[in-house]
Picture: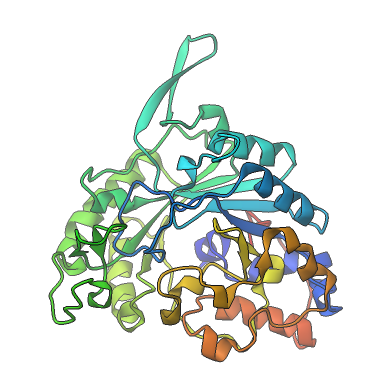
Length: 381
């Protein structure tokens, strides 16, 4: 349970931020962390990816920094670099600045930085007057890794041709290393221009809903258990998060049972299962403390918008809060549900608990007493 509350967004950490909670109770929001999805460019075709349709979008470097500067003025403490693509592949189409430049600029602003990535092939970089070498992802400088508070590497490479997860030389005295893996079936779909694989019959271009998976998750459990155990022993991550495919809510209970058996067989002191059944919240407040900037330039209330069936695997207009340059308006106006009718618009939400807690803060039914101890990564709520 401690791993879950420390390394995922369960809502407990929000009460460590008394100023933000007090402001929310008084009708004004305050950002604590923001997701920035730099690009939808990716080298993988993950079957479970919630962003199935990619347009080749990337945020402009100056826009990202201007957006963060606005939020810093309202109390922002940290940034998560993530996306429907792979953030380390980011390259600004205007300035040509890359992922290293983004991390450096955020770090200089005094913000903590988390990274969620599939990784990339490794490259040896020379350091210290070319006397020593350090392995990092190709295009990512080793010193960039040291500026990250934490890195969560998706183990999706185990499902691809490389059958490998590329792990750089992380200095764990500076950066927390974690892994994640999504349990899912695989349907090969080479006709899909963005994804060579999907995880459910509903997404097959052919529309053959009766087709059997090309690879059942059940058939891969033993091999995956052995592979993930190997990475745990080799790299000693702080945690490994196993979770079911949120696009298939009817399978979540069974998948979690299977994943828990995997966790127990690997090392339950390090490996945990995150149970994330989608459920529409009564009201949507998460975007006040954790807004999401997508690579299309718009701000969204969370990153689970794409899990709503009506979204069609993309950040749709229905869930837009504002354009990035207007983000200050969220914090200058009285607090309200950021989604007008979440019961109808957000049945795929995986943050009903966090929204419920924040709803209690807003209406005065939740005690704002801070926790006795401050958890790790407290600025990533």
